[in-house]
Amino acid sequence: MRLVRWTPDDLFRRLDDVVAVYGEAMNYRTDLLAARRGYIATHVRRPGFRAVASLTSEGHLAGFGYGYLGSPGQWWHDQVHRALDGDARQHWLTDCFEVVELHVRPPAQGLGLGSRQLTALLTMAPGSTALLSTPEADEQRSRAWRLYRRFGFVDLLRHFHFPGDERPFGILGRGLPLTPQAPADRTASAPGPSVP
Image (cartoon, rainbow, N blue to C red; front, top):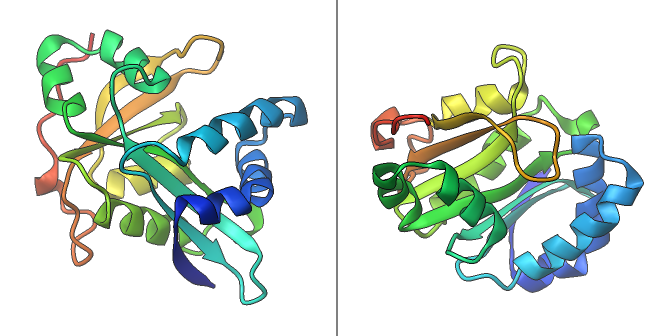
């Protein structure tokens, strides 16, 4: 398995594979994936876009991750902005890299690919903070939650509901930069803001 940095064009060329991995990892219905494909296609042109991919020796996509600089007018950014208090907005959203997607095909999970992808993504991320959202889950049993905690992500919002999605999400953040030598250095994280 090799980890490669993708340009926006690289991700766009493999968009069908990306959507397939996303669907498998999130266990989403096929009808939801068509809309997601359109969103991902527009994300590759956002400022600060960074992407990584885990490829098998045959070139098959086993996992991927990407993000970009968040800014007002972007749907996710605006939803989180409205939910945070003023001090938290200032600290977390002023110069924020949003980890938009980070997924590994289920058969390849548990092999450290998610950790390698997140390390690479955060190491090359612009911005002074990194934020992400993840479905609420039992933190002890969820690989995603354990991964984010290992990387020093702290709670910004819990049991948050995005419009149009019934599932509750956790909104997590950590400070940047992330050095490759110490991916889980919790000292890089600022104290968590008050939760509304």
